[in-house]
Length: 291
Image 1 (cartoon, rainbow, N blue to C red):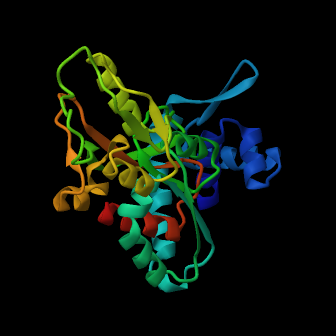
Image 2: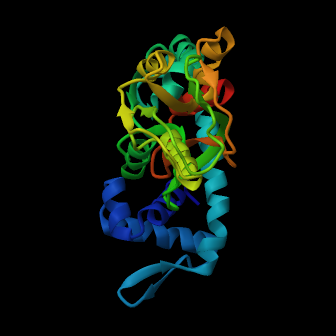
């Protein structure tokens, strides 16, 4: 049994057909067919069967797949064994939202740069819905973002942290009752954009309690939002870790609410077809250790 036959089988499963697997592996389709035939002979099982015009994986093929995955993972580990992490090269493209990039990932970024200086790291900053779409399309190697749903079976996603949302205001704001229902407030809700998870959570809460504010202000960054809130221009919902210093210094105050679920999960996600390079594996481990 040859290792390349196992990789070919795995590629067919990932790509969905012999033809797509051949294109990805840069093989002819006849080569792919031959390798699967050789693998079937070695294992004494039928891995694929023709149903109509398509080749479908058999029950035996489905049952053996986890074992093949385990073998390939172990081989990858052996191939990486003994290599100095500082010798790693290549490129790594990572996407995450501003709050995680600015407030939570700096220690991981510093360690990654120190440990693997030859890897060209490209960081992109987007909202969580854009990051989700990037991962689905394979536009980035991996992403870290708040859970907004929408992934299918082609994506590996893992919850690696959880944080709390805080609704904050200026110490100058007099009317801080955001619990009593059916109220009208002469204050604006400030957000980076309407398509972000904390704005959506806060808006849902206000709508449920029929608390109507005096419009929405969209600003470009978390720092601009915090300064505007401190100036009593409006209120904002942000991850608590972004405003901890301001709350401790009394520059911002937290507004009491009856929000049932104020916690947001952070996901690490990447497309299953993406190769888990040693650099990517190291970056993910550092982020898990940091977040």
